[in-house]
Length: 244
Image 1 (tube, rainbow, N blue to C red):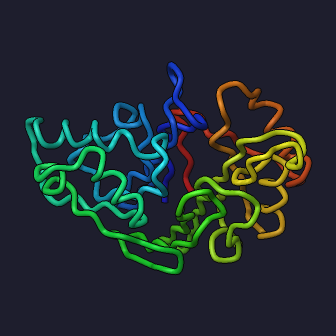
Image 2: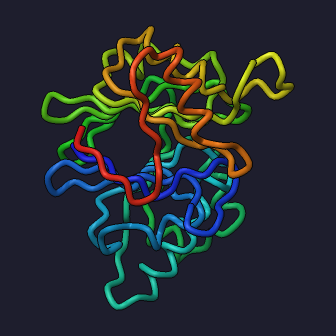
């Protein structure tokens, strides 16, 4: 498998740094996971080559470029119909309530997924577990060719980590906070230190931090995660590619 980081900014995009979005590939299977603002133009392939789309939850920094993709696919030179989209039912309802019409629903084939579900997308098996977030959110575990990629999505400490991150070859984990978790009233994100602790406890081989808000110094986040993970930690930056 291969991971291409399209965007990783937490909460909102900035110039040169789109919000959450990743391309996960195995052979001819290419899945756009989270379609945050700015990630469509960061795709390293033409949109007609996207096999399917997975959206973790309804917060706009994780799905707004689905609208951009719709305009490109529906009105561009190579229109498509029925692109599979997998997301929690509440996300599907939210997206369709804001921008859905007959053409939108024709361009995309929406399929609800929930914690405990497993699906196959081309050459990749994907399993889902509920994360610890303020709206229904699915973390995901991607398996192909004997390799495992795990994605925390947005989550607090109470995620179902055994089902997602255990023995992952690469664990992509959010790190929205720095310092002590007790300092934050909103408990549905992780500190960088907690991300490292979870990765170490689950036996993840490599850890990559993502969803760091623009106002935080990512170098400090990496340092905090490395202290608890007890080995080098990678940082998700747009344009980064990793073989899993």
